[in-house]
Image 1 (tube, rainbow, N blue to C red):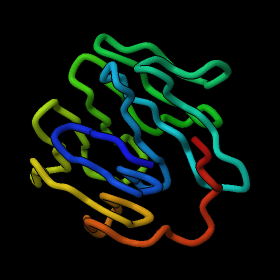
Image 2 (image 1 turned 90 degrees about the vertical axis):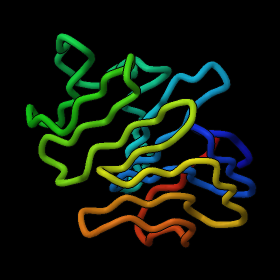
Image 3 (image 1 turned 30 degrees about the vertical axis):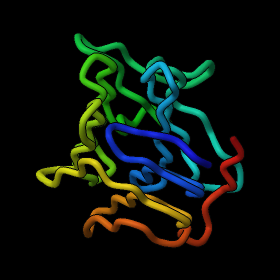
Length: 141
């Protein structure tokens, strides 16, 4: 996959931003989509800045809280392009036109070439340019 996200350019990268087990991608219009890759099949949660059809969510003042089995997982603010963990234990991620912010770390103007994952965010830290983690569902775009 070749795309631009924030000011990052991802060339021959399968997943530009992996937030825990969730692939985050941005389309040409700037809208974000979030796909949960945990389990055997990928599950679309956010599609074009809105909750995907069939996804359990609660509207908030500035976005949507995504649910799983009535448990609040994370909140997405489409205006600010911010993912905020509620129960996932992950740092906040924000995609701006000029940068990608993960917690207090900022990525700006990078080109990432030929990796399974461009930026991987886990509870334990951030990796830039790495292999696909094992046991994730295949992301087919």
